[in-house]
Image (tube, rainbow, N blue to C red):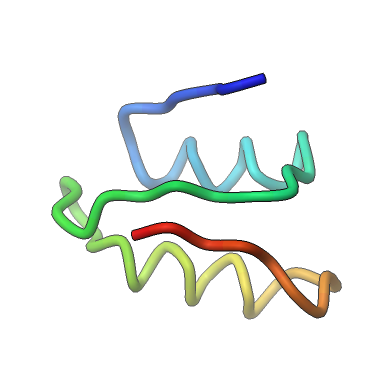
Length: 54
């Protein structure tokens, strides 16, 4: 299943709702860059490893 989102804030919320196995993210996002989004996810996540494609 692939789920998309258009805002970083909604994408972070959606990550915690769905707990995906992999995150594919663009570096150039509105309001936050992709690295900041990943950092926010990792800071609040209990998952030790997450596959990330940037």
